[in-house]
Length: 245
Image (cartoon, rainbow, N blue to C red; front, side, top):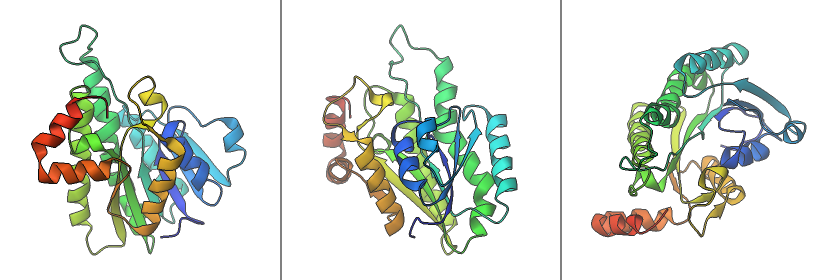
């Protein structure tokens, strides 16, 4: 699918990878961003057709309201949905600064809200002759690391959900895609890890994968991680425990 003159709903377009996706998609498409904060005004001024729907992805009522607004405004259908928003809390359960209250928030934003948005917009996606769902995932959904156990679990859950939904929608006009990311230079990873990919290059790879219809788009080092994990899961696990990835 060529991403041109399409109607695309996305989450997380106010910063990081989501902002770079919005920058690229917004010049030739109608983009609706669901997030608590809006993108920078300077960027919005250069977008073709852009709508910001203030949404707290950790709150089910806010997500339901955003879905209803999308369905009402674009009753003719939606061409694509990109679930990009995510949060990651790094303290271990054994750390003094660990807060149990963050568990529900992390699960809601990373896993529950993407599923809810997909369920709420699937009918709109099926109205179009060709449509896609793209869930932005992580190499940590394939092999977890020592830190961020809840984050790793949400990404593994998103992978399993995506593959299950893909099987459900087989034979329809809606493609279910994933992009598995390595460590990317974004506000979420500030001060952690080395050898990060730029958000700009990752956004380009994500868009290229959508246009080519790549079911599971392994970006950067994730290609190697998946290969190692297939041959030797224990080796992949040891590699991931050596440092932030």
